[in-house]
Image 1 (cartoon, rainbow, N blue to C red):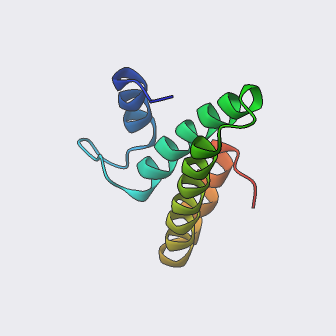
Image 2 (image 1 turned 90 degrees about the horizontal axis):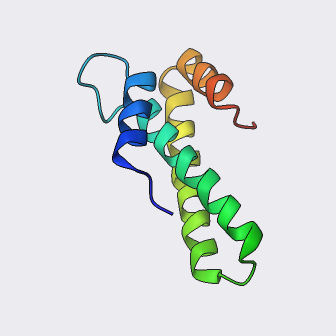
Length: 89
């Protein structure tokens, strides 16, 4: 249910704006999206895992806040990350 170190490094390389960038909103959104997808798959098989469902909802709301921030600061970056990660909205 956790993201591996290698997968996290791949996401940082793929979505980073500059070399050494590890905390930009794009990277945070990409990491959260990866975790949300994993938890969604887990919940399909474990429908009564309510603690996991609560964690999933918290991650989705954190990702939504980051997306709203990015939309306010730079709408073009917002549209790019939505398209690259195939997120609805």
